[in-house]
Image 1 (cartoon, one colour):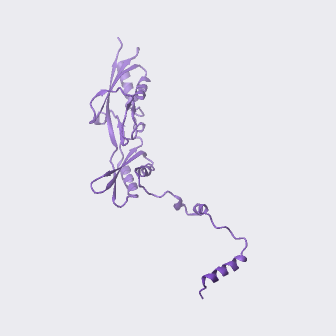
Image 2: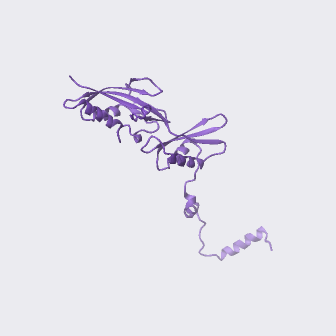
Image 3: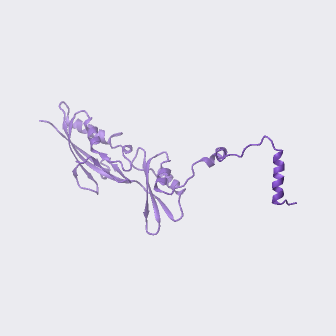
Length: 235
């Protein structure tokens, strides 16, 4: 037999009068704490460029990520680039993993495109140093090249990421620390396909937020930046 609302209220009041040792209603905070672990994990969602960058940077091999929105004719496309740790290029497996991650937040009416590599600014440098007495020019030249572009050197992949500028003072300090270098006399630079050769006279060589500086100095890939060192002996 169905009870009217007024009867239900009276019935609840009668039952409540005989209930003892009851518990207070569970708080929302307590409910969230006791919920299954999966529901407490971060959900995969991305709306702004920063969201896509944060999602990409969860991958263990990503040092930094950069995302930008561009209108590609009929719809908005999200372009995502990753700066891998300890390298200038992603492996095929890493690229596939990043694509799979971005597909998890693919929205209707908006494409997501993972770039093969970041927008690298490849720099050519011409450096003149003055030789300190008691050292050989060839040894100092080799030491300068090793300090700048050798393993773990000044231009190592992890030392520059998206938007990191080249500071002239830091570059000079790295050269000046090398035994046999008396002074750094001049530095010229050229951004390949961007600028001509010129004197590096300003304090900073600045890059855009989606660009990364690259100086590999490998004869197999001269287009990825080079360093020429000239050692002048004091007469």
